[in-house]
Length: 127
Figure 1 (cartoon, rainbow, N blue to C red):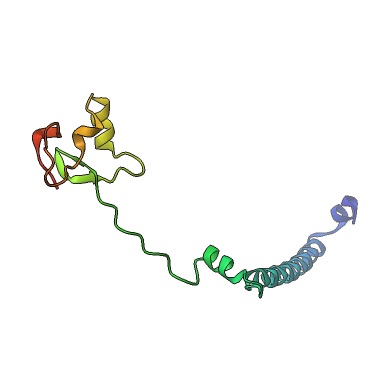
Figure 2 (tube, rainbow, N blue to C red; figure 1 turned 180 degrees about the vertical axis):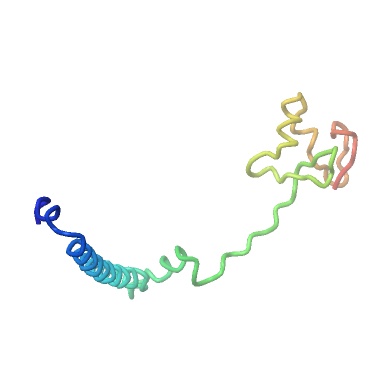
């Protein structure tokens, strides 16, 4: 249809054309959605050749995650002894601030029983 044809149409004809187009588009969208859902269902089905485990680990279904041992904290905040850090991952803010102010990481180390606590920040022995 040309633009001139559309401009020549009156309001009622344009409205009927609009409703017809809306209906056709809705049907096409529904059909496309059904096709995509079929494809997705096929992709989510585990294959017979051992790929079932791969799909299960990626989607979060299947076997539960392996249990990891609890990581023991290695450093503590002498101003707030309940704040600890295992030495893994990003350093906590209190440790970053202390290191920037001139302290060393060794000063915040949690001492094992029997080790001397000399050099431990605040002179506290913490286990």
